[in-house]
Length: 338
Image (cartoon, rainbow, N blue to C red):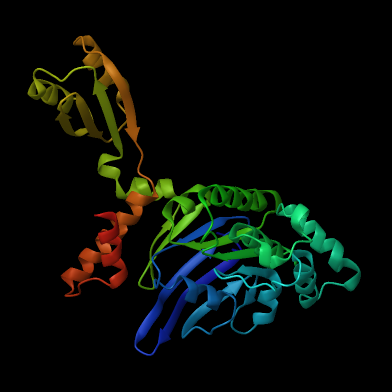
């Protein structure tokens, strides 16, 4: 990757004996939407603070837009817009005045501040509510106002820390769609920190799975899926109108086909794991035997399965090393039942 807009090399942060971030290496390209995924306490926010130059690393180096975050924090802040999970506005002021105030703090010329603020309000869909007091805004509207605040200085990078907390599902979908549109149309690099798997999968180009300060995985979701589930990368599910009269016969016939690794027959449902997509051959076999097929589907391994697999590996490693796994891992498995 040539001239990445964000580059972390051996980034480490210690708080006494606690290693919050552990030798993190990461590069993010211009215009990319990168999802930093992990449970609360994994080190995501600490990494963001080092990116912004708000806390110094114990070792390693952070470069953002060509500037060293530790030695040139002001230059970095001029290039980066940051939206934390908790937004603060002056509730007694209207939204436009809040934004104008922020514009002045960012050094925007007085002759431009109001026009720029109004443009940002329109960009995030708040033009009709710009004169309403910020205290009357819903959580979703405040998130949009926060995004307008981030964008007003025209940053090259936007960092969003848990940006969808407290927003209803429809608002989340709309917000994420806007983030993607913004990145694509204006070439803005977005770093999105979250523990919501489905939201990260909806919007991000690449993901990094972060556990106990370590980056366990870093790639496109489809590539991670192929790496983790290569042995059964294709899982085909076939539903018949009636149960098979001789399941063992069909099990044997399917297992003889090239690439088939496993066959599971349960009543009128057949699940076939294989190394290639042989769906036409499977369907042909049942049709030639006179069976009516009610449905055919292919299982897709998404971020939830990838996330679980990496957590499972991490937990197994901890147990083998005499550790029981941290609280966040235990709560994850309890919550998902895995």
